Image (cartoon, rainbow, N blue to C red; front, side, top):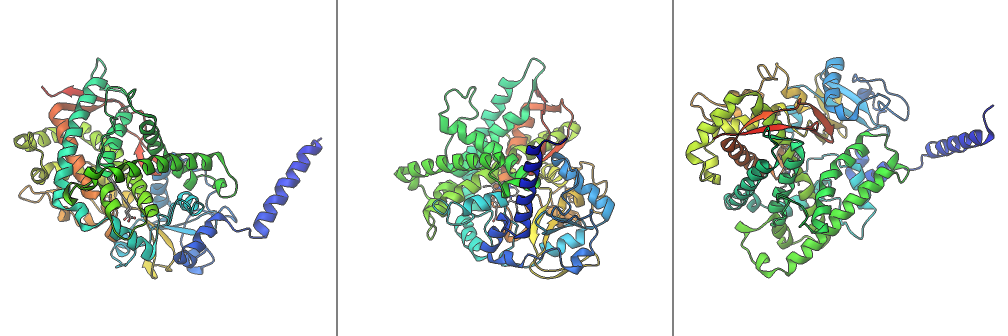
Length: 518
Ligand code: HEM
């Protein structure tokens, strides 16, 4: 006999669900969607053309979310979708919104080359929902998530041409050289008796966040010191929040989505991290505004924080969210470096070539000098081609397109599956093989146009919406790689596996052996 309480509970839950769906109680997604004019045009699955696109079985309410996808293997899942259904694949979110994956080089290029005034990238739902619920703190969804003319305004104000000027890059180059030397020392201290740094990803993340704070906040946090005992609570909490927020965003995006209807644990965790970062950044901004010396620096020596604080036409809410967005977005360095170290570890001869190429310049790794490192830059690009951390670039179509014979209407969300496409032999010869030489011309010079499929190598995105941190990150990766190779021979001591955490990241633990070069 089923106890009466169980029956009553069942009836209560069923009635609630029927009420929720039958009365079309507004989903939080649609609240967000209606708040952003462009989103009203996102097409729903009722479009006949969209239905013709192959993909996993679609069920009412849950779309294609019934599949037992291991969330941390999502990047492999997309490769299997391509193998099963072809170059254009349809998935349907639980809120009936279609998401179309494009795997074919020509289709990807069509979207990239569409000349949009304000390229639309679907926003992160959980962040958008939370920021909309806090008008006391946020005036907009922020640079990463805002759309249309408002995004255009934020982008123009927060990423002025001076941001990537030679002088700003040169000035940061010398700061980053110092940090890299500290990092080399940290590795020395963290090696065990076999010269292995266990859980290297943790050490690398410290470097990543220290570099981000130097670039964006213009301050040294001390995350690379021997011990963290000296750090104040804010510094410790900032580190934890910035490190963990990506995992929560991933779960909100690809999980069961219950946070949209109930105040789940996941949503509380998200608020906890977002609020922590907000409070600490607001404190730092207030301190900075009172630091007259800092604010008086000329634009060539300014941090991104000072540039944003000095920008005209942005209110304080915009400035705070801008700094938060820059800080969280810049955490990708650590994953990209670990992928690169894996490839270098597999090919000691590449390490040797980098060593020889950079030997004459090792004492002065200036911004001008590192441009001469053709082979090193080719090795970095090759790693980003095979193992980008952003496995796809998302866009919302602004006009109808024909993709490999399928008509796809404006308003559809497409995922440009650059990682899968970049690992296909039809686009790159022996695509899965790490081969820096493919990026060198007959004179041994690095040339991005050396491969005909280079337009789909988009680790930093593309066009007006591309990553504003690209030049900084390429510079950081070059300096760090050169310094590491001049100090150590690098060898992976754990199996190399990737996992999905909103971004593709190395599966931990990563153990790397660093043997002194001399
Ligand atoms: C290896 C390091 C990095 C990688 C691989 C990376 C990758 C990306 C990608 C793929 C996008 C999306 C671009 C698009 O949709 O076309 C993006 C956007 C963005 N990145 Fe990065 N990024 C890195 C480092 C940084 C750094 C250091 C900063 C800060 C200075 C930064 C700030 C941003 C911001 C603010 C956006 C949003 C731009 C917008 O929507 O207008 N990133 N990044």
